[in-house]
Length: 196
Image (cartoon, one colour):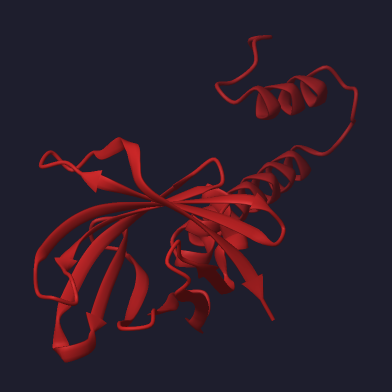
């Protein structure tokens, strides 16, 4: 027999240990041990794949679980904005609600298994529709959004959500370019406080 590890270093180390008599066993025991090891490894890999295949898994991977909750911000003109992200069907669907002094909308956020993206579908007052895609990385959640404003104007915006501390979230509203990239400069920055 060769004395080199197999392709998987851990399996190779186990096999070398048995081949050199460090763990004396009957040959059938080797096979049982190896099959148990492979079954355990397969189970762990499948569990890891499943956890990332739902919205909760994606949020965990991106470090944005903190986003879930109710938030409120005051505008420069003294108006109030309310925003919430709450589980509709955990771990698959988040329902988002937005309310200002003169506008209101609701959105569904879900993981689309077909194209492996987190989708956003919104309905506002008077039936206007919006859609988007969420990207989460390093604790920052960005929504690339296309829809219409309360006045019916077409809009393409990026909403960058960043946790400032346990009770504060910063949301930067940025331009969404025609190539789908979010602009570098904030058009508006809002500080939301977590609500009970």
